[in-house]
Length: 222
Image (tube, rainbow, N blue to C red):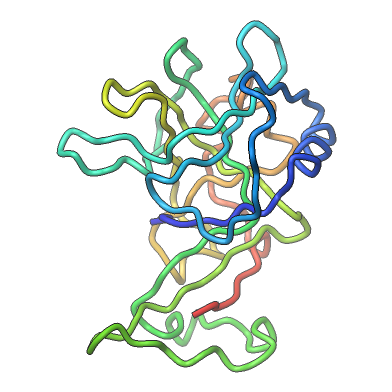
């Protein structure tokens, strides 16, 4: 499942995009440092948006750790949304993770032949597989939302006794753009649903669903 994503959006782009989504942003801890990051991985800190305390319809921007410790100590970085409902509470709730790309990995250098992508999506032949020792590295695929410079991943945040406040990404069944690469996908939202997700106005079962075919662009980066 998704264990790496990219976020190269600036605070100015975030403000502009959120305004277009009919929302208001607040920065209770100051405007965060947001360098362009090609790779954000599990346990890294990253910005999230969540419902602002005491200000209806507003979202607050804070930086928190990706994943909290599970019962066995393994990081909870993805969480199944299937049939579940999620409410905003004082120490937990819904959040959004801004991103402009996310990555998936496959053992084979390409999806199954019947699911292979047209070659013109790559622009050139996919790069040769690298090796780590005797074992080839997995093929790495970058996914972007068609027509958007950045988008949001639906997530949850909570206060953990050991890790403090942390967040995880929600997952659902894969849509047709993801199915050749993985049997699950992260929940991806478009601007009309950002405020509806954060405020709790829309049921999770309505928004935690795969995207229609053709909404994601994909290219092999390794």
